[in-house]
Length: 144
Image (cartoon, rainbow, N blue to C red; front, side, top):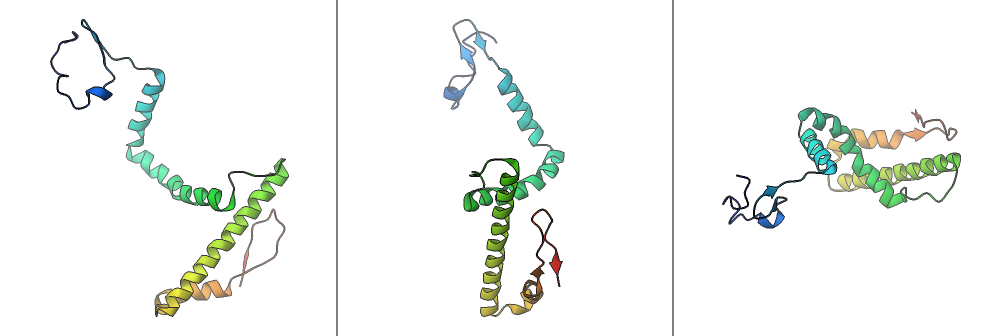
């Protein structure tokens, strides 16, 4: 019923949040383009294919967030493309050093508490990895 007195809305706990506009003769629901696009997007996010492709991105978002918070990657204090890329590379290199130090600390704690058998291979790998000096634009390579 399109009239304002349909009886279905009385006693509804969500009446204050209801988007339907009521007047004595008519109940209206107006949808703008933004609301429609948002509804389509949320429906698309519930599809398994979307979740499988988004899973990869969601795995890296925590790292991106920590990079911004810990190293200040969200605000670069340089101008120009070469300086910007160098700043990003140095911040990411510092991040890798911090992560390597935390892995080493974890391994030392585990060894101290008697768990070397489970993490022995990782510890051995960590001890024997050395980085070869390279120019900044080339990726680092492992040297054993």
